[in-house]
View 1: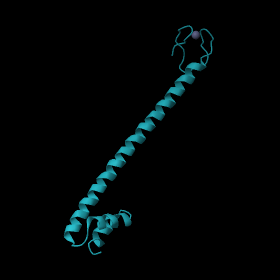
View 2: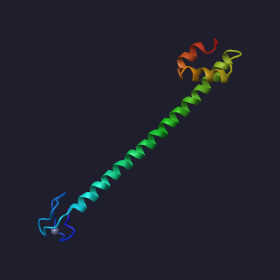
View 3: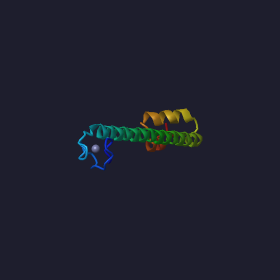
Length: 105
Ligand SMILES: [Zn+2]
């Protein structure tokens, strides 16, 4: 890095310039703060992306449940889509269990 006072090249992270002898703590502190802020920005972006992926996944699952319930309702008379969706919800979204026991209820 470059000493901001005498413009000589000094070792990265040096606290004192070996040419002019002046302290350099402000530069390293600022750099450390900037990288910490950048790390938090990455974490924030990652969290938002993860939330979006989970939301899309759950929305897609919901669509699959509705599609499954519509076919189950048409296969078993008197078994409505609403009943099927309630059953899926009550079973803790255990679709396999609903697929086996659903139409008989
Ligand atoms: Zn210097």
